[in-house]
Length: 350
Image (cartoon, rainbow, N blue to C red; front, side, top):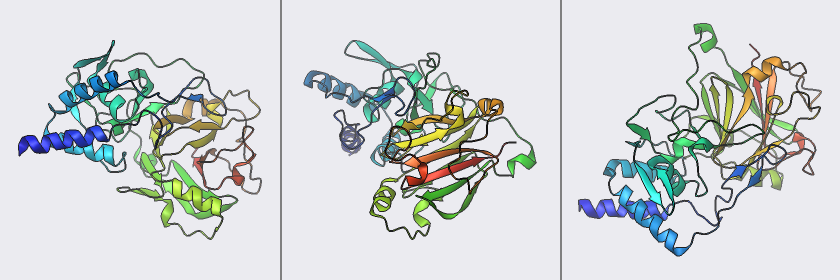
């Protein structure tokens, strides 16, 4: 019975591996320079039968060595696509596997199998704040839960230094005064076209999930807001928000992780050249993270924010995020107020 259950879990995990020829989560990667589309999407071509058989054999041999409870937790994470909270999958960090002519660390191989078939390098990854391994270094064990990781969006800057095991891209925020911990570090407004829906949501915790429908989620649930907008486009986009985004305050700035199955679009003064007259709108694909607000850059900005609502003046820094639909010079929608569903994140300037 023990072997039968374990084998069943392994088979279910293999069937739940990431697709390689673009159905479901069609956006498997972005690389290259910044701009309207944050680089080009890369679609992984279907692997040849020989490579597929080799990958299957290697994956099965690895999974069969993992404890049954860990397999169940991994299956929960993979089948829910990160929607269900799942524990860390702590496995030996110094185990390498050879696939074809390439050698991969154990965590990198599992990330390739269950999330990003085109993944080649650990420098393309960022550990999520929810992971217990975030900011920690353990020479023996590393979390291999593929939904505790995200892909890094690349702007016009060199990639981070190589590390074979993606453990410590960022350190946890420094301790702060009791007064600062009890005051909101940002507020979030949800808009449908030109109408704000619901109240302003004040954020005190370091991490916030903003979603429409999430199996296990705490945070800002857009699905609970009362909206009178009957536009078919708004309703269509609303249904695609799904798991939404994760907004995290970290030591060097505020990061946005796209948890949904569709792109999001972000406009922020700290994402562009400070000398630029027009802020670009950046496209962020599912599973990717971007530092949407940089504290150091924000402190050096001499210009006010680029607001499109003169009737809603803001004195603090803001970031605008649209779900599914983009706007700006690359799109027919010139202003974010034409987007069906979008967020305004307003940061304290302290």
